[in-house]
Image 1 (tube, rainbow, N blue to C red):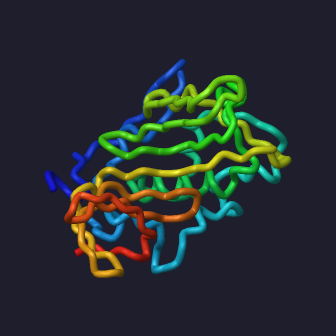
Image 2: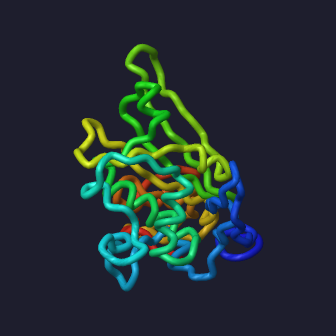
Image 3: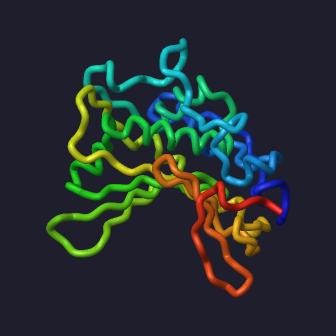
Length: 226
């Protein structure tokens, strides 16, 4: 693995000024980590699943269920979650996705709703930077539609917070390519190398390339680093 753990160079978080406002996004986040457990795609602390930042402490994230409908930018949401969570690293990106999934019934993106997409999934892809990939289907056209948003564009993504549940909540996922090449041992004894660590909703998965070239997907609990 080149460079530091995760194979990604460290970067310094810097505020980005847009339209006269300082808005911090994930672009400067130090995504590389030295803790191998975090590299392995874990979203737990002390062996217990993360419930995300608490919602009833000062500085904690907004709770859409007790708010009237409101709109914030994705950059503002990232900032607010980071105030409660601390470091902006790979674990934070997974916790961000977990918070979005937990509150999915009360969230929507204005651009997605204007496009009339259905079966919507939002994936935070982690490479050298974090990219939001939105996929969905248009009832009036065949195939799948895709929208890619880079970190510096997060201030232009508008997230609507709904007090009442929406009809079709989005699925929130992550893909962490920083673990690519990490040796893994599966529960059935097979060995291979990580392709990506993923979360789909609140479930953790490994995509593993086995010795023969086959790529399999296994739950996180069925693979160990080594």
